[in-house]
Every structure is written in C-alpha cells, then in structure tokens.
Image 1 (cartoon, rainbow, N blue to C red):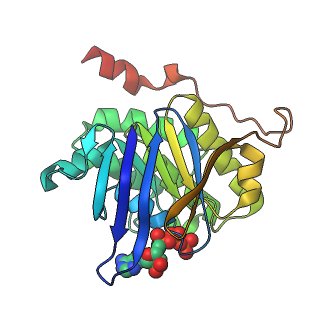
Image 2 (image 1 turned 180 degrees about the vertical axis):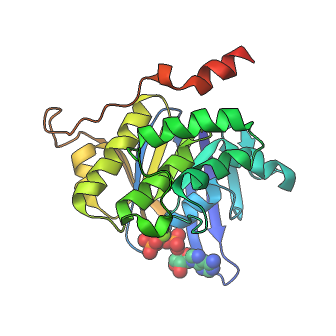
Length: 250
Ligand SMILES: Nc1ncnc2c1ncn2[C@@H]1O[C@H](COP(=O)(O)OP(=O)(O)OP(=O)(O)O)[C@@H](O)[C@H]1O
Ligand SMILES: [Mg+2]
C-alpha cells in the first residue's frame, strides 16, 4: 500500500527534510506519525499525496509508482486517498452539504449517488441537522468533522490526516479520533500526524517517530484505555450506505 525505499527529500534551499527513509505501511493499518516541529512529518505526508516529489529513492502508494507517475495520473492517485487538512480548507460560500458533495461532483459522480453518499457520511461524522449551515456557523470541531466527511465521501482506501485534533478541545479530539478508529475497523488505512502524545497513548496503534528527517522509532503500542473506558460511537450500518449497493449493481 505504501512502500518507501531509501527516500530522501532535499528542498531547493538545501534543507534535507527526509533522509534515507525506508518504510512499509500495509492496507488496514492504523498509524501515528509523531516527532518534534521541523522533524519532517508534513514532508512525509506531502510525498505520499505527491504534493512534493522525492529527491532520491523509491515510493509506491496504492499501486502508483510516484517516481514515474505522469502529471495527468496524479488525480487518480488522490482519489484513492482522503486528506484531512489541518486548516480544514472548507469553502465558506457553500453550506455543509455542498462542501462535502463538492468532492464527489468534482469527479463527475451522478447527483443521485451524491445524495445517498453525502447523507451517509454526514451520519458517520455525526452532523445530521447541520447540512444547511455555512462553515462560519459551526464550531471548530464541527468544521473538522465536515473536513473528515469530505475526506470520506469518495470511499478512499486510505485516510491521511495532518494534526486532525490540532485546534479543538480534548473532548472533541477524542470524538474525532473515535471516528477514525471506527473507519479503520471498516478496513480503511488511517495515517495521522499528531503532536498530542495523550491521544497516541489513549488509542494506541503503530507509532512512527521522525527526528531530523530520519525514522528513529517504529513500534506498536497498546491503548492505555481499556475497551469499556473508550467511548463507543455507533456507525450507521453499511446497509444504509446505498452507494455500495449501487456500485455492485453497476
Ligand atoms: N518548502 C520548503 N522549502 C524549504 N524547506 C522546507 C520546506 N518545507 C519544509 N521545509 C523544511 O524541512 C524540514 C521539515 O519540515 P516539515 O514541514 O516536514 O516538518 P514537520 O515535522 O511537519 O514540522 P511541524 O510539526 O512544525 O509541522 C524543516 O527544517 C523545514 O524548515
Ligand atoms: Mg507539519
């Protein structure tokens, strides 16, 4: 799913942001990327989404060879991933519904499918009843959940989130994390950059630490919260996702 071999990234000003990184992340993994400011975490994500290209090495992501990928193929790579940006990147002129629908309309999905799928992801992130609000009429956590819904709407193989709990209170951070855990349980690979070690300890998973552009630690930690301490959220049944039925029909 992600295969990196001896990857280095040197920016044009000479900064070596990643040094000789070799790493595999398989389908269905739940991964935290941690490390101090300037360590190379965002650079790592930018290589995965092909916003930056590696200077040396080999990178394969979801079947695409990123050292050889043609420009016109990049949108196809991006369709395999849902990206949650730290600064949300919502469109203020559009309401919640349209912000989410936009990601599907952009790839030419028929409107009937858009309606079903958007309704489903709005339920998944717990935003029912807020469809008509503009981003500015939402709390930070609600905006973050719109951003997550938009990342999920095209049913990606992989979710990539840069500091998804960055600007929100601990209770909301917990809820966002719980959604990501649920999504991962349904088979989606989840990769999260975070500064918040409390979150990492509470939820557990594979923790990759980057320092000075190098991977200095790669281990699996058990969640410190016992299962009955963890808040449970109930995902809508996959049967409610009529989109799936539609896909298999076609
Ligand atoms: N476009 C760029 N041009 C030159 N240097 C850059 C560029 N982007 C990042 N860097 C440098 O590369 C290194 C890694 O940056 P990166 O943004 O990957 O760090 P980070 O781990 O995401 O940090 P933070 O936690 O502060 O977001 C830093 O030294 C940074 O100054
Ligand atoms: Mg960063």
